[in-house]
Length: 414
Image 1 (cartoon, rainbow, N blue to C red):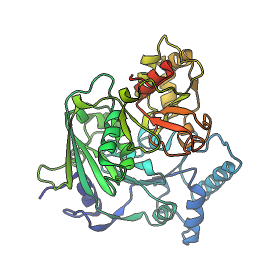
Image 2 (image 1 turned 135 degrees about the vertical axis):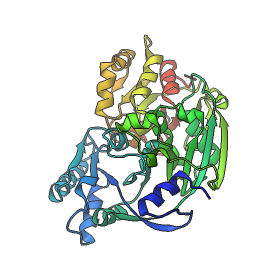
Image 3 (image 1 turned 120 degrees about the horizontal axis):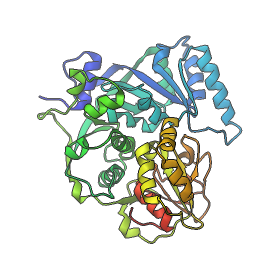
């Protein structure tokens, strides 16, 4: 009997010939990520558990991204606690406003194909874009890993998603993952692995795969996985080993569900207030007036996202009374967008460009809205109160749809 990608990763990690869904195993963790929101709680719990040293300081990454620059008085406490903890235990990898944690973990080379990685954020599923098993955990679990280097997991069942064909010019991987979430429902993949395959997926950039892996959690998935290929090798600046290249679902692997899509059937879609699985075609909402557009986040703040928006915004202006906020996912993305002229196009169109970080996605550092306002955003969640008051309407979309809507002042297809 064959194995799925997640089964192969876990089996190799623990030195087993194979593992099966439902099996409880203890894995050896390759890397962990802690962000600024959770570091005080992780630090306190770590010492409460009686640990006196990290299992491996080189495998721990601390990233300040949600709370920078500080917008509330208590934010400074998080930075102070983080700095103290890092200094006390010899942590080597600390990023202070270099970008969003999920962008940096692969961009900076912390995660490689076949790795097992945990982070204190639900969107840690993002690293499946390079073929890693990555998942979000709480601060108690993280404290335990910091002291032991191990973590128990239940081997998840796998849903295989086949996508074949060529996407329309105005359809992106964001439209694909939103459609899938709508079809599965917000709990349709709870504690399951999503495994993506098909020539549409093979032709995607790593950035596009990141968008899909990032939002897998919105269907409840434990992780999302793409087979490592030459694009992965180039992105990770490495040569794939035979084991890494073989991280593909076997033909005789057992899946709890298989879903088939034709790329030509996808259309631009929106996740409508206030559930991520409330999916409707953009054309069904065309003409809905908006107050703001947000392009950024760990879902769609990469260079290809900013360039897609710039292509639409070139020689155009953001509609009167509409605010367009653009937040690059990292300093590297920001720098590249400046160097290739993307930022100039966005600025000339009237965009407000912010420092790299989470920004409006978590409703912290600029751009929050008030009662009755509507925003089209490229991030991953549209829950009540996420970007201001509970009476703000959040529509999730691709960068193309977001940019086109910013120019029109209303929801339109990109």
